[in-house]
Length: 168
Ligand SMILES: [Zn+2]
Image (cartoon, rainbow, N blue to C red):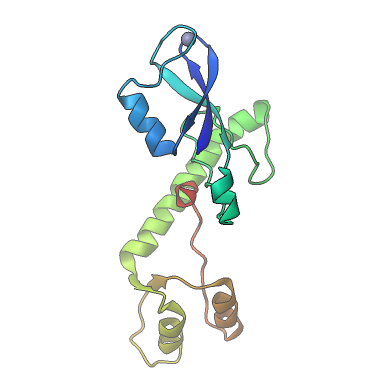
């Protein structure tokens, strides 16, 4: 369950629980999420506070990943890293979005031009490096350890940029 801080167009703030962001979006799309003060169904997320039910914590599952923030005020409960605000940060957020777009395009290009070898990546990267397989661009999955081993062997490995949508 995720608790959302919501706000209607009149600025009334209230809280509601949802099974997840999809559940929230589905309920909102069907006008089922209404402001308790004025009944308006034009509501948006003001802030998200991830919370886990006791059953889930007992199973030792991870916290739900923070939803990427399409709403400007959506801030996850636990910060993922350093955060900033103020006029400089406001100006920088536009540039950050541009950089993110470039990273997204870069990753899409690498994935479009390369061959997806999935978890066979370390093995395939070695074969290419040692001339046992055709030289070509590949991408796939590697653990931190596998990537470190490859780099140690002199095989160049580029970690693809992690995008906010990956956490979804
Ligand atoms: Zn309201």
